[in-house]
Each structure stands twice: as structure tokens, then as C-alpha cells.
Length: 211
Image (cartoon, rainbow, N blue to C red; front, side, top):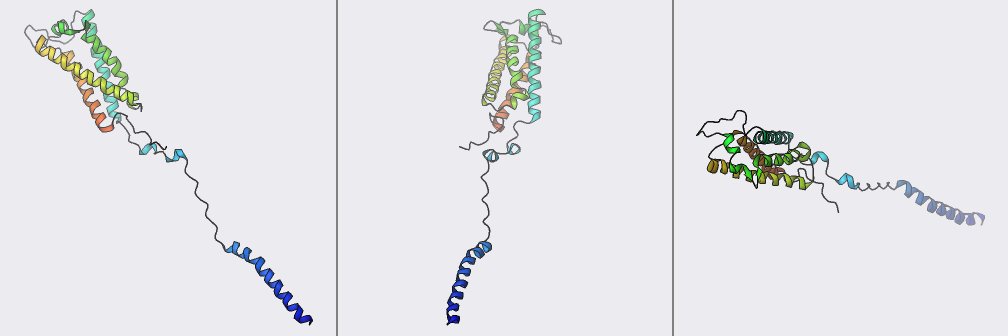
């Protein structure tokens, strides 16, 4: 009788031990759950700086800056000659009946627009153009700066077309220095339009909006 009563007790003990050991064994054998990767921060989603369009090349920035300075220097010299040197410019031909005569151009009625000497208007234009065509302005991301540069180039080119018409068909003479300013303005116009067509009016693309 003692042995028969001991068997159920031993079976119950074994069952209890098996039940208590099962969760432990499962916990040990269960593969570890991989921690979820943290969501990338907002600044990590932004487009890398090197992946953005580089914008206008350095040679374009330097060339336009140098052209704007050249146009300003010529315009200042023309203004000085007209106001203080009897419209005499160094190196200009003064031959009666000749094609080139800076003095005749600078003293003609067409040399003033709204009572303002054309040379002075050229100085004012290039005083604005020099900072607009500087490398620092080319690298700015403010759209207004690039729009203003393009607008100034268009206005300047339109004024140059009028001056060429006045020289050829109204005055009948050509000023070498004026022609130099015309060429500078034409080059700035072409480069600005080319830049706007290739790189747009923002210089560099802004990062995409994440909202």
C-alpha cells in the first residue's frame, strides 16, 4: 500500500516539474526578436549637399564679374571725359567724315535721355550690375536675386539696341568706347540667359519639402 500511494505522488511531482520547466525552455530556445531600426531623423532625409546640382560653374561667375567691372570702368571714363575733358577719349579717331568719332557721339542730342547723359546711366547700371554679377550673388539661393539679374540684363540689352540705332541712323557716327560697353552688355545678357535656361533662376535646388 505504501508503494502504491507513492507512485501518484511521484507522477504529480514530475508533472509539476515539467510544467514549471517548459516556459523556461521555450524562453531559452525562442530566437531573439531583432530590434526595430529607429526612424531616420528629419535632417538625415534631406538630400546630401554633394548630390545637389552644383549651380553655375566658377568660370561663369568670375567672367561675368570681370565683365561687369569692365563695363563700370568704361562708363566712368566716358562720364569723366564728357564732363571734364570736352568729350575727348583717348585713342578715339577724330576724322571729318569718318565712321568713328566719339566726340560727335558724346555731344549729340542722342547722348542724353530724359536730360541725363547716357554715360551716367551706364555708370548707374553697372553700379548695380557689379554686385549682381559677383560670385557671391551667383551663389545666393534667393530667387529674387537671380530674377533681378536677368531683368537687369534684359533692360540693359534693350537700351543698348536703342543706342546702336541712334549711333548708326541718327548720329551717323560710332564711338569705340560705347561699342565696348555694348559688347560687354551683350555678353552679360547672353551668359545670364544661358544660365537661366540651364540652371534656372535659383542657382541651386532647394531641399524637398518633407511636410
